[in-house]
Length: 155
Image (cartoon, rainbow, N blue to C red; front, side, top):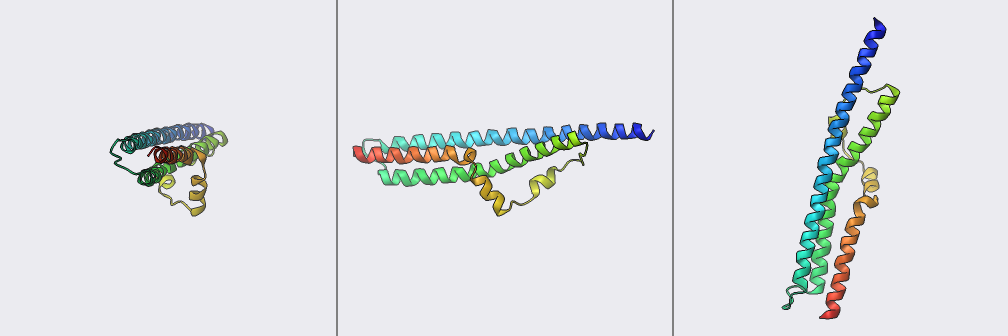
């Protein structure tokens, strides 16, 4: 019966692994939803800021527009970074679980350990260099600067 118990343990272990994968997929889905909301809010706020720049009375100067726009882009970048980190951790954990299933070495759920551990400076710098994180914000920042240049040439 030892072989039968091993098969049952393996089946249970694989079922736990799939349940943990589902939890991580929910985390990824929820956090990616937040990321798109953050980008949507930034787009809406920049659009409102552009409207104030091109009003006839000149509510904002181009320099003020550029400063406010760049600050907004920076703040929203760091807001997104707070959601980006758990997404990356969940993706790494799912990859590890899949490898553990293949190797038959799944040791059980590790949700609190995975999300609770602190990031090292090297990990933070690696994540900040990822174009998936900063490229949309570089584009937003570029748009703000170009619009400020256009507005200064019109005035």
